[in-house]
View 1: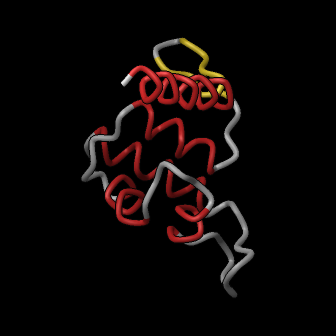
View 2 (view 1 turned 135 degrees about the vertical axis):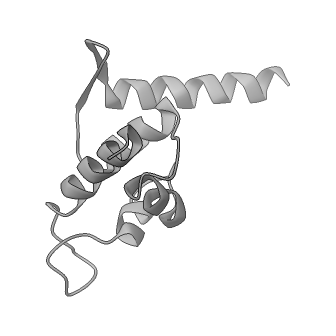
Length: 99
């Protein structure tokens, strides 16, 4: 199993722990997850879960947010998911303002 496949397997496992509110299924679908998140598409979620994608830190954080993860730990650094997203949105606003 590749490292990307390990990441995808863990993300799929976490998604399958969230009950579906839109469909008569035991867990949330990739589409429901994408609908909950402004930074992800069903296609991207599928390619990440299959270990085919090479997601950026931004996409991993948005994925974590949609899975109700509050803190990510990467390289022994704790990333506050909500703070990261707020800072990312503010940064994009400033770039548009300066353009």
